[in-house]
Image (cartoon, rainbow, N blue to C red; front, side, top):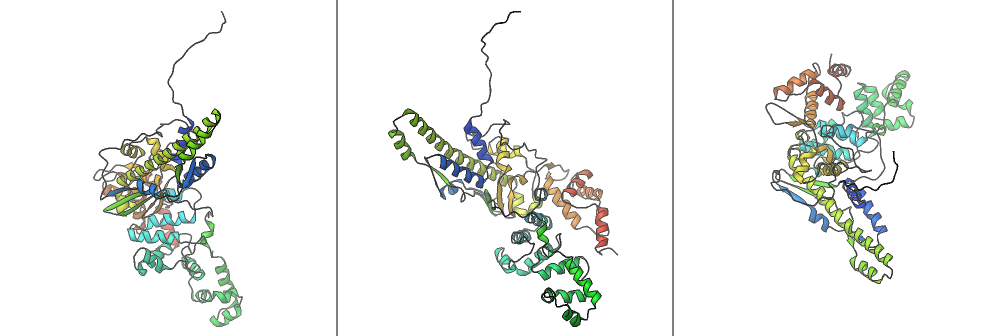
Length: 473
């Protein structure tokens, strides 16, 4: 066998990911706050980038849909430098399957839940009427970290143009959330809610609670004489009150960090909806071309000229890339609005099935582009600030009506259980039969899975809990 050196030429096709292409992919994944930080960093490194706050960008990117949107007959052809398929990138988000993308309640219930997430999840499940849901979300937003509500209810009523009685009715329903005591407007109300749950609203306890200031000062003798309470009973009352939690919201995660603002905003009514980009927190990139030309012209060395030309090219690219990122985000928001118009007109119960592929085909971009844009972006809606990814839900076929989303099915399961007779709670099989009557075929294990996601106990446990609460005799 002979050993010798040889030169060979091979030809092959491949996809090269340039530095700018990697940066473009990152821009898609950034929300507005992250993008603003990135732009400021680039401005510090590049002498030809100037930043200014302008409304022109927002005006040019606003999109409007009138009446009920239909799928666009003609797609806007744009040169998309972000369409890179499944190529590897260190910051590439995990590939999503529409069956695994969480709905509203799953999103709120996952991870280390915050107080706001906990109460808004309850609100979306409790209220289906639009006005009541808006009131509930506003009350959730006004909740203190302690779990108390210190906002004047009249102010909430004015914001939603509703009556004070209606706001009070919504508040009463919110006060049934666990842990008991949330949405109390005072220490007294917080304690009374918890005593009511324990069925301990007795006259002598109520008398002591009405005089918490005296109890705090240690004037026990005055209270005993005034309400004729014996020593042993007073000790029981004090022990009971001390066992209650005066700040039920303290057990939840509370983040004092900066609040992340939404990236998109959807406003309007059933006849006219609009999607706009929140660009007020985004600085506008301005390329100082005059300064760049002067600097390049006065540069004596070729290396310096090349250095300045590179920075000028980078500045121009950044401006174009941000503009295209914003346009792509707006178009995806418009597409989601078109597909989920029933959600915005009628409420969370009408969230329809939607996949990344459907939106990508409607917008005219790659599916991975839709995934990147929606993975980390928030949108302000009439029902609160929500992540874009919750609008994607799996499809469940039905025999006598249109296919429905998994999120809509979950909402209906919650409503069925809420309206059930505590003496005869619905089993998973009963729920399957209820859906079959309206033409929706769903497996029992699917009902059980959705019930567990919503933290709803089994029919046996619900019956047991009703008995403990005194509903059953």
